[in-house]
Image (cartoon, rainbow, N blue to C red; front, side):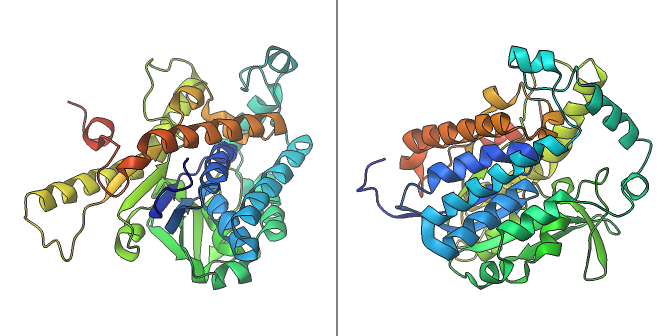
Length: 344
């Protein structure tokens, strides 16, 4: 990008998706290179929340450069855990350069058992490697004091089924674990007397805090989970993958429809424009690259795989910067009706 680009402020919404969050790492790494690009608020869920917290904690410590370093340090550490996990590709897949678990005996054994035995049974002491990674790489005290950018982290309340949004000033290890707690892998963390599961069920990510609490009119969604599949899934694993994608995109689609509805009312003059403002929606994605990766690979943390996703993210962000920056503050670059409204 040209160095004379006018300063622009945007909000970021970061989807969750396990190890696929390395895609968002690549996106943030590229965006942080553009000093003219400012951030008003970040909303994230699960891996998206972790990326957002890492970015802002690094920024608080040493600016954009340190933010990029901290993100790389974290994801490098994630990759180092690969040797301790049961989620391994079959040697034939490794040899052929395929990323997936179709031939992985260890993955299929775990996947089968996880639907028969709960984590409270097979993991009674609640061993959670995410806890150690978060403790090592995020200084929550420093993060809570960093008031330059707003941060919203979503989790799903088990008891009520409702969303809980943690603001930056109340974030701690418990809140982050709540946002990342996969029900079939970890115990539900308790925060303020309530128990929580992964935020992706009800807000992936939550957009409404951005509308109510941020001033920037441009919303950039970093989307991990593919919206569209061109073929009907036939195998058990393909069906499970598609079910997961639909479920974890549902809340985002709902909020996108609300944005479209309010924007149309504003255009028609039916709403007070001093109270309501249009939201310009943009999206950074790489569906062609991410679509071949099944949802199961969200558990794959091989360093080679994470770096591949990082590369996808940087490339997608670069394309977005080259093609859509001129629209910021003027108009949306996402066709919400065709992407998120009811199919006709």
